[in-house]
Length: 512
Image (cartoon, rainbow, N blue to C red; front, side):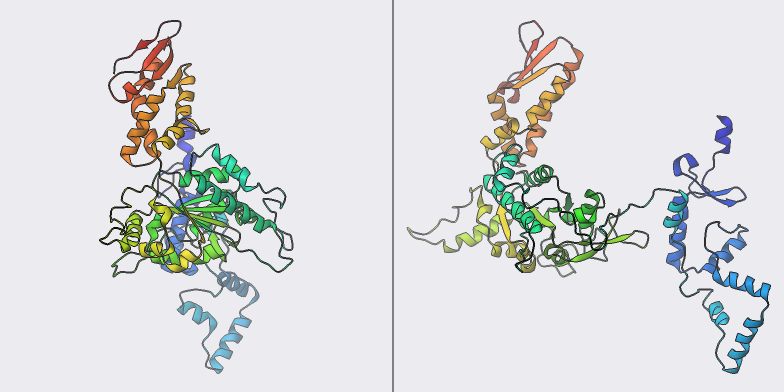
């Protein structure tokens, strides 16, 4: 073991051992460099404009041997061949250049610092990947020329809208209108892909825009839909997107994530679903004197994606650079679903609806819509334009629908009805300790009432249950005699404790 430690190589730049970095590049005289540091060094030299001759001069000054595996400088190989066969041709070129007063090519190469046209620094990622250094590049799966793309659904195997909605009902509580709209839109979208254009009638795709308060199930609805259909799904956050050339994710990174979700299969990715969350965060900024690189500019950059076009996307990375391979993806058959909470849109809708408010018996009251929980269902395109969405962007999202705010009854159903209900999750956790967990109806109602006060939707349910289940989950593993735990309304309201039943013993009421 001591001999292995002594013989282990360390990178001269970062100091990491070969067991962590992988195979080292040996530079001679005991100098070793890891692939990552070597890549950074090559990137820096290429960015600074160093030529091949500068690199060779630098290595000669450092008394380093030539790097094995790199292509030799054509100028040096030509010079060596000239020395072996004679300098006749080189002298003839110089004489002709002197007679015609034209500069010699060799002199030009020297004046340019040794840069030879058509010769650039080697792509180290290809070099290292070929020799077994570092991870290999992801391989992009493409169909052969002339081969028809494989379709995810056949025209007869596409699930009908009522079947899609029935599957969603097992996981999503309520939101009947939203589930109906998204089921029909997805059904028509894949019918459009499976249909042929023999009659010269081309069906356009219908991208969707979902509006709803936070915690109402927008993201969960799309995740469930993609899992049921078994299609590639990419979920992107619009808050990180910026205009091309600025710090942040480019617009094409959305399609790059979809390509990754499809295992780099371009044909499968071109029939996937992209969900862009927090779409309201790219609204046009009001009273902005500076360039809006994360607002209106992002909307304009997304127009080509939504409508359908061939774009170059990086493979295995979120940003474009010289070291990342690129591939072409056609977004014509990609379904885009945008979602957002749109805070402040309610005030715009109320202002539009209250324009007719006046004094009189038939006039609308100004506070008529203040307590309307489903005010977003009255949204129009004009309201979205007033919020900050440009008309070109809204026009490419023809299906606009809203989700209902969660009520007390819906929150109670969310706790116990879905397949992945939160109560069922805790019951499974305690079942691993051979303990049965039950919640009274009063306890479920008390949890729903507390969740409504927090105004964060269904996300508040887990936060409340985590708070009350903390002591139970901590104490149960201590005693193997505990057989069941029943949570009551009194425990949620801090006026009592959970009912704990021991195995073959009468139940005990715990103290809060």
